[in-house]
Image (tube, rainbow, N blue to C red):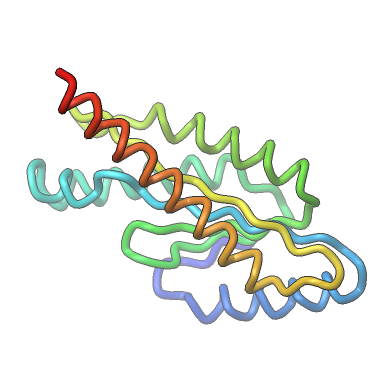
Length: 156
């Protein structure tokens, strides 16, 4: 599978353009975005070496889930994206599987999860809209996790 190394955002942009060509020819494309929850806290409390180790574990989880024709990229400090040539149902299954695996990540003593979002471009849609859908779903999951944590803290 194609893995764009950190800083290779241009490769991600090229992959999105290629994906749009496939969508325009009738093939669905899905985008899964992942935001590592708690990276700043790990860096601040345990140090940047632990933060880097956490990012490597996240990349390993993504690589383990990536298939030959997927494109994987670290698109930001604590954000990753996966471009996969599948339709909505399979994309949702793969996003749910990733979400489950990320929830098991641990950094030394702190539980660290990741927020995962998914979007799909089918013929007639733009791939960039699938990226936006995935980002929106990812941030909704992140907000729901934060709200649940805040609620538990207030009610404790």
